[in-house]
Length: 149
Image (cartoon, rainbow, N blue to C red):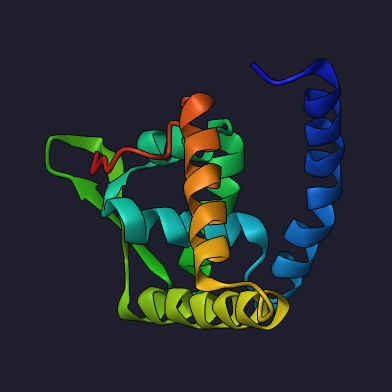
């Protein structure tokens, strides 16, 4: 078990990590804020789904999810179609334009990471990735499983 001081330093690092997330967010296209990017990314990762599942994966309430979904739907990045099992519900799925938007966001963030971590070894990047995945698993991240609905 780590020492108390190590956990305190970890808390400081988490706080400072906000700057990294903000810089990554600045790479997003101006018409695609982070909430919209999260919607698109989850639809790529998990496939089509109901809005209730999306809200669960985003870990936000339905009103916030609805705003994000409206934003991406207005831009033609997703479509909402009736759920055959429940006509009151909608199934969300990416359009070709949405898939292209996700590819563009991925190119931008990958480029930023490649630039900022250019002096890191492949092993260092792999270790950071492994440890971040382990940290998420320790917090029981609900976005980890591949759920389609």
